[in-house]
Image (cartoon, each protein chain N blue to C red):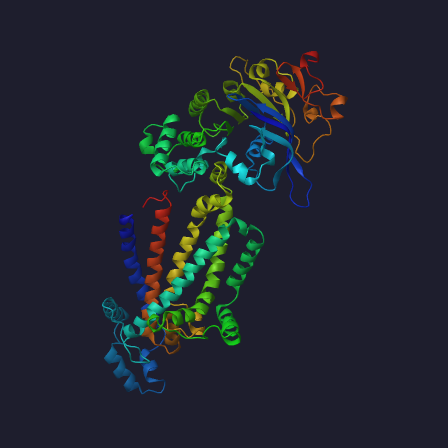
Length: 311
Length: 324
């Protein structure tokens, strides 16, 4: 398995080079002049030329990319064009915020979708309610759900803060209170989609002969469900989690914006709005690496659970 | 030891008429004996076995009859009580050894689960020792090593041995074997059947052997029940079934066995097909295909009656010697 991980990593590296190059080329070179963006539309041609020369915007795109990649490898992503701050210093505080939000939402979604849908009692009314919630979770837009939750729990009931973020060290309770609504908002979608994937697979596994054999041993219905159906039916959910977690590493764009959470997603949106391409590049690269790493982790988890996969 | 009386198993989805897959079956199996149940696909033999285990897939249910086993009526037990019977007192093996075992768990873990379900106190070391012992009994070589194998590392014959080891791990009084060798190749079939017979001699368990293969029945069964369209057509000792069959359907089945000594030619086949359970004839269910049928056969279903000591047949026209 270690050999497999190393082989996969060997593939990940060239992938990252190619993809970051495409990312770099599209954001920096092909979409417009960074100099014009930094100086404004009425800048004089002389000023633009001077800026291009100073930052190397006139160099061939490959040279520019290598200069950027060399910096990125040492954690140096350049300076933001809009705030003039080092990009690394902007990302450093945002990254853990995003990761915490993503992990809570995904963890809760996996546990509840797999757990609820495996419960034997969840076949009748509970099952129908859970199906209803899955459909609502998948279909309702995030910003709408977020705004609705804020209206109910913050404005009407006053139980929870409307927006914002409080770090752990300023009070754990306050931290969690600020987390609840954004986590629930993000969770709703993933609960719905994981439930749908899991239920479909559950129904397929349930019909397998080994499930009947397990029942013929004298196991209770819930033991059959949790010990024999769940371990097989959860496998596609793990693959799916690998994909979604990788995307969420780059920030839950809508949720972070609605709840004014200082994560990567909000940083990304702001950067796009102001054509701040060093920030866009950095966040884009984080998403890219995140997707590849979480997919690798998902594959390793699948191999650990399924002895038929030899790596 | 097992006595089935008037068992009727129906499948009824809401709003549709119920369909009886098993319709008024009486059977008995004695301790240490093997009852072969034969019949074509769809005759209800597998549904009968799942009825005994109370593992009918929904919307199947037992609508009438009793399944008396060791003084209890299995049809009347609660689910909790039934779980004490499954695996512990009645075990079952299935047709497809390739898919009978959970692919994600080692065979040792799966055997241990069968033992632990009925013996909560067993320690891990104890479970392992008993698992190895169970594999040894079904003649799996190097059981100390194979116990950690996963199903995909084993052949079909080996997996069926594992299934037998698992089924016998709690020393059941009755083993239901639903087409246990159909999916195996011929030499492995013989090995598995010999193994079952040896284990039966060792443990004194009864076996219900469900098959469509009359060769397997001749080799294994003490008694045979021939099923047709959800009913027992004939039940008798194995020798009587093969030497002196009384039901025209049994005759037809025997006529369709290829024989080495017979001159080459067409096999005798029974004309027509089994009537579907939603379009059964009013009288004898075999009458439309029966060469001996007359007007009486279409009036009412023939009851199962004794025709010779130990031989029961559901046919108005039997004994067939008189008419043939």
